[in-house]
Image (cartoon, rainbow, N blue to C red; front, side, top):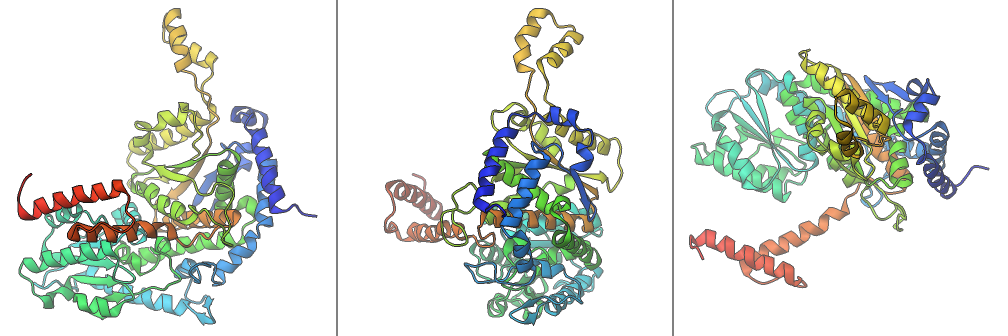
Length: 554
C-alpha cells in the first residue's frame, strides 16, 4: 500500500532532520558521480542541482509525495482547460497562449487556440506597421518611443522580457515602462519624450485599474497640452483590454484594442496581448520564438519523468527547504545583466501565487507555503548581501542563473561573470575550514597572534544550497523556456501544498481601505472603524495635501 500524503510529509521532516547533519563536502567526496546524476537538461536550459542538501533517498521521497498529491492529474487538469482556479471558477490556460496553431485546447467545449492565433495575427499586423514606420503619429512622423502603462503582471513580465532582449530592438525604437502611480516616474519620463513620436500602450483588462488609468489619463493630458487634439489620441494610444466602451471613451479606436481572456491570469499574461510592447520591441518573429521556447518547456513538463523534469525538480527541492529546513526565503541571482528584472518578476509569480493560508478546500494549510523571494544581479549582489549568505545564521537557498554565451561575446567581461557565478556556488557549498583559513593566513605571512585573532572570522561552515541554471544563450527561445519553467515550478508547489496558486484575494483589502482613506483626504471624515494611528496619519496627510493646494505653509 502506498503511503498517504500525511505519512510522506512526516517522513520528509524526518529525512530533513537527518540530512541537516550531513555536509555537502562529504557527499561530493563520497559520490564522484553526484554532479552528473543530479543534473537535467531541456529546451536550451541546463540545471545543476547537485549542490543541494539532499540525497537520492530524499528525492525518492519527494517524488512519492508528488505522486500521492496527484501531481500528474493536476497537470492534466490544467492543460486540459479544467477550472482549476476554484475560487474564481476559471480555467488556467496561459499554456494555450504558446500552443501551435493546430492544437486543440478546449474550455467548455470551445477550442481557444484559433482565438489565440487570431489575436497574435492582430498584434503582428500592428507591430509590423509601427516597426516599419508605416504607422505615423499625428504630425506624420514615425514612432520612436513605446511607453507601456500597466502594473503587476501587465508590467513585470513585459519589462523583464524587453530588458532581456533589448539587443533585438531596431535602432531608433525605445521601450519604456510606467507602473508606479507616484507621478515622479511618469513626469520624469514624459520630460524626455516627444509627443509627435510617442506611442502609449495602456494595459488594463477592465480599463479601470486605478494606478494604470491614473497614469494613462495623466499621459493623455500631457499629450493634449502640447498642441494635439482629441482626434489625434488614436494615433498615439492603443489599449490591451476587454472593455471596448471604456477604451473608446478614452479616445482609442477599438480597432486598436488587443484582447485576452479570463483564463489568463495577470502574472501569466506576458504571452498574451499584454506582451504587445514586447512584440513592438523585438518583432513578431522573435515574439513567436519566445512562445516556442515556453511551449517546449510545457511539453517537457507534461512528459518528462520527475527525475528529469526541470520544473518538478526545482519545485520539490524548494518544498524540501521550506517544509524540511524551515527556510523562509529564496534568493534569485541572475548572472546576466539582461536578466536583472528576473527577481522582481519571480517575486510576484511565486509570492502572489502561493502566499496562501488556506487550502483549496478552505481549510488552514497547516504548514509553511511560499517563501519570500528576493534577489539582485549576481555580481552586484556579491558586493551587497552575499556576506549574509555565506556567514549569516539563517539558511537561504538560492538559484544562480547565467548564460553560457554572451550575445556580444565581450571578453574578459563574460569570463568574469561566469567565473564568479560558478565560484560563488562552490564557495557557498564548501565553506572554509579552520585548517584552510589558518594555512591561508600563514601563506600571507601574518604573525601567529594575528592569525589567532582573525581565525574565527575567516572560517565559515558552507553547506549552503544552490541551484545553477545555465542558458545556452539568452535568446527569445531560451528566455521563454526559463520563464515557463518557473511558472510550472510554482504550480507544482501549489499542488503539493494544496493551495490555489491562481487567485490573490490577499491584495484586495489594502486597495479597499486605500479608497476610503483617499476619500477622507477630501472630506475630513474618518473611515468607519479606523484605528487611532490610521486617523492620525490621515489627518497629517490631509493637512499636507491642503497646504500644497492652497500654497500656504504652516
